Image 1 (cartoon, rainbow, N blue to C red):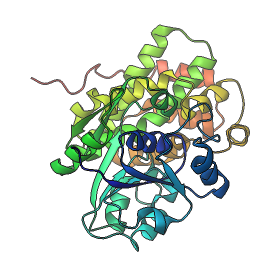
Image 2: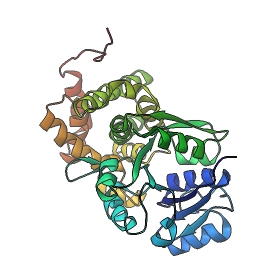
Image 3: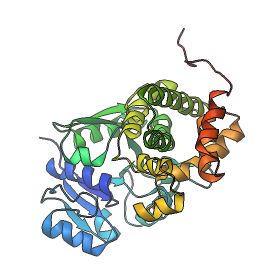
Image 4: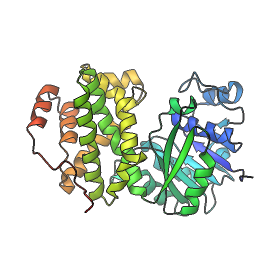
Length: 338
């Protein structure tokens, strides 16, 4: 019989709720921590998260709490599903309540502004005694709770951690693959958000499939080019956390980043879009950081530069696209294995 774990999922958004529900259905003791008491009461009483997943009933075993101490005390596994700007503060508070060797898995696809730090690096600083992993892949939450088949990647240098998370989340519609390339898996999840904004813009402009295919493929080239400069394995980007996540996020209006891009393509400005969506997508923040890092590392990223010019320099989309078509032509595949 599989060991029954005591688990906290920190962050009551769509993805945090989705993975918490999988583990509750797998008969684990799961508490979903969130800040909104009315939403916690709704999950406990009605077994639904109407703010994020209104059409999908949740397993009655899933509990919700607004007390962080109550949620994480005595847990052996914690999933961090809070926005990137909250990760450090939440982790610092968690440190007061957990013991050594607790597994902490980040699901946040973002980058901290100061120092271009990924969430695994933030967690390692705040929780030095924890065993850290990263979960990333083509995982649109509404499709997960609708029990559509998908897969994800758990990345850690700790093979036992990978085995534990694979068993924890495995079910008929959700498969978990393992990787040791934490940095590559995590970078793939963060960087693809930027390119999803471009894909949404392209869809709003009504461009054809040839152009969409070119955009996604060249996005993958930029992502992997940058990631290799930061120490990642380029082969990671051929997997679920690279090209898999990129395709899903660049193809679906379920992606918040895609929706931001679509509205930009319709002529709305960023302030209007944030007001309409209720929060900014991770890709908007990542774009600034990525452009700065690319310039420091001298990595050629014309798509990032073009999107930055559109969003922050208010340049005309058609002018930017025209300039991109006459930019330097590089090799198609940069990491050939000979």
